[in-house]
Length: 177
Image (tube, rainbow, N blue to C red; front, top):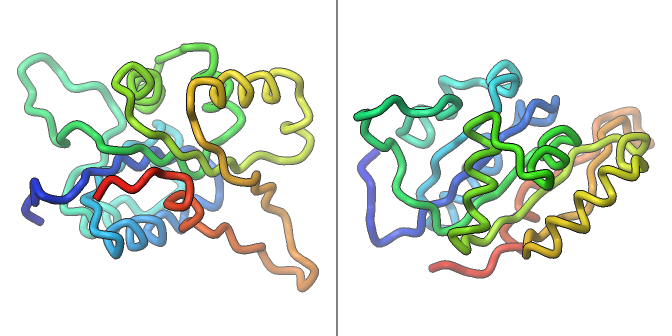
């Protein structure tokens, strides 16, 4: 895929949650909205989705590790960032300003760059009740981060997995096109 500088560039940060197996749904929705997409995954998230399919769909490598000095940047600067699925661990570390992975460093940096960030949390009700998580949501919200309704997974009334609704991320972002 060749880069089209006229299109806005979206970073998709993927965390390690079962629903990440459907990340191509978000990428498709972004591309249908005329975004170029680059994926940054937490190291554990790489085991949760088809990395070959994502690289084929975006035409870019998935980033999970820091670049070494002199290595070319595989993505342009972002016009927006979507974190989906966003886990308890990532939300709490991000709010604390920890940048021990490329994904977290990217999220921490987005604030300083003024880049809009939309988050689709995937956190169990038990973890969402933790005071640290609630404080993290408040801190990040105060930084302008926009959150979708939480997704706890589990099963719906028919015994299947409820729909994640990836496209909610775009309702949270200020249009960049």
